[in-house]
Length: 162
Image (cartoon, rainbow, N blue to C red):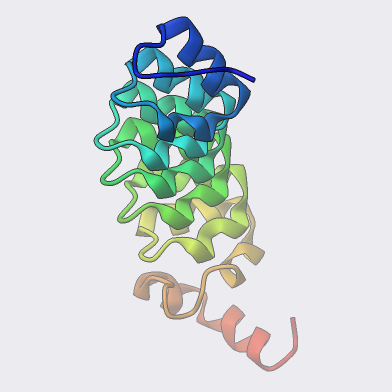
């Protein structure tokens, strides 16, 4: 058992959060080093931090991309790191950039359905990868230009021919 008090040393706090990252909640004003140790143990500890630095946000999403859900207004670099770790993290990113969208679908084409407004270039890349990917894009999200271009395929799919 690790004994802690308000006067405990940084070394004691580091052991405390390394044992269980949620212990960070019991430390008053932890240093960035202590936060980093907690995040490296388990990135979800970021949910208990107000205004985490970019370094801490990156550590959290590199540990697990899903930790993006605990970060308010993440920077582009953090969003990119999250989808690099797990393409499905795009589900928790508001208005992802084209680069973030592309990286996520390159990880797994099926994540397209989790992008609220997939950009035209992203949709084109996906369909160029495989024509069958047109069916992965939800109909209400398929760009008008592509809906017209692949109307014959969509109609054939509806009719059960494909």
